[in-house]
Length: 90
Image (cartoon, rainbow, N blue to C red; front, side, top):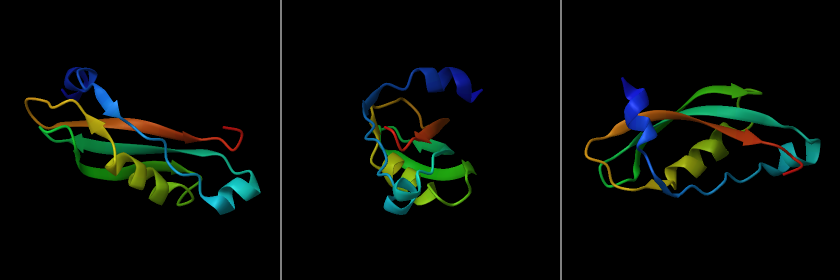
């Protein structure tokens, strides 16, 4: 049931996550699947990591990034999933 509502989310600001320096030096790439809840004011009210590859390398920066995301206000809170990719080459 969450899918149609998620399509109506219009991002205002979704800054990219910071690349962990140790992962950058090691040339490590990966991705993190996060579940976020967008409140009626468009801010992120909850976020959690569902899956991360490799585990625990990018989790903290992914969560730090999504907490700063802003969407246009919505009528009711929306929970959706987003994948954040980390590639050392940009």
